[in-house]
View 1: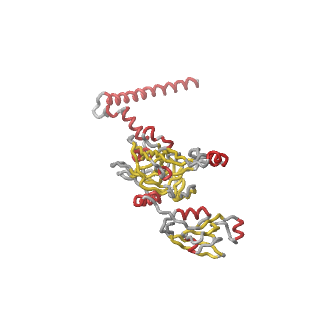
View 2 (view 1 turned 180 degrees about the vertical axis):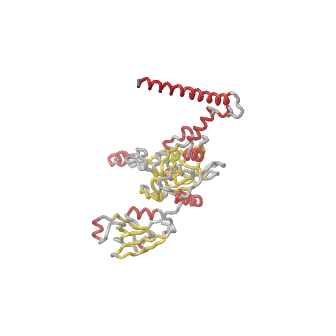
View 3 (view 1 turned 30 degrees about the horizontal axis):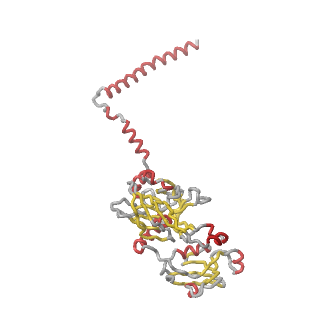
Length: 395
C-alpha cells in the first residue's frame, strides 16, 4: 500500500511538471520567435558576434604593456656589425727554439668581425652602443628594421665607462626617450631588445626578452680597466650580441644600456639570468661629453700602487679590520708624492666615500677625469689624514 501511495505522489509531481516545462518552452519559443522573426522591440541579428569580432577580442586580450612597448620602440633598435684590425702574434715565435731558426717575427694584422646592438637617440641619426662593441672598429655597419644597412662613423668613445656614440647620415628616424634611472624600482618590468647572436639580421627585427629589475646601483668589476658603476641588474635574458641594446621600462623609456652578463662559467656559456645594464643617467652624461669632445680625458697618473689588506698586514699595521687598501709604492715626483702620500698609508676613503678594498679604490679613481680633485682619506699611525691633489694630464 505504501508503495502505491509513493507512485501516485510521483505521478502527481510529473503531471505538475509537464505544464511547467511546456510553459517554459512556449515562452522560450515566443522570445526566440520575436528575436528571429522581427518582433517589434527584439534585438537585431547584427548583435550576433562575428568571427572577425571574436578574433579582435582575443587580440585585444593578448595585448599588454610588453607588446605595446615592443610595437612602440622596435624601429629605434639597430643591429651593428663591425670590422676591427687586430695584431696577431704567431704563437711559435714566443718559443726561443723557433726564433733561432726563423728570427724575430712581427705581428701580422688580421681583420676580426663582431656584432652587437644599438639604439637611436635622435631623429638625425645619433646611436648609442658599448665601446667594446664599436670603439676599436675600422668599419661599422648599422642595420635598421627597414632592412637598410648604413655605414656609421664613430663620434666618440670612452673605454673606461664602456660607452660609444655613433652617427649615421639619415634624418626623420624614430628614436627612444630616456627615463630617469634614479627612479627605477626593484621588481618593476625590464624589457631588453637587441641583436643576440646576430639574429636581428634574419628578419630585420630586434629580439625581445623580459624580466624584472633585480637590483640597482650595482658596481661590477671587470677587466680592461673598465669602471662599471651605477649598474642595473636584471634577469631579462641577455646574451652575446645584446651589448649596446636598450633596457626599457613598461612605458617604453630607456632605463639602461645592456652591457655584461654573469655566465656562471666559461665565456661561451649563455645567460643564467644575471645581466647588467649601465644606468641611462650615467650613459647620457657620458654621451653629452662625447658629442662635444669625442672622448673623455682620463690621461692622468696618480703615481702610487696599492694592495689589499689581509689579517697579516692588519696585524703589522695595528689596524682594527682589513677594510681599505695599503699603499705599497709611491713614485717619486708623482702627483701623490707631491701631495704627501707615503708607503704604508691605508686608504679608507676616496673623495669622501668609504672604500672596502683595493678594487674599490682603483674603481673610484679610474672614473675621474683630468682636472678633477682627488681627496684620499688615509690612516697613518692610528690617525686620519686627508691627502688632496688635482689630476693633471700626464706628459
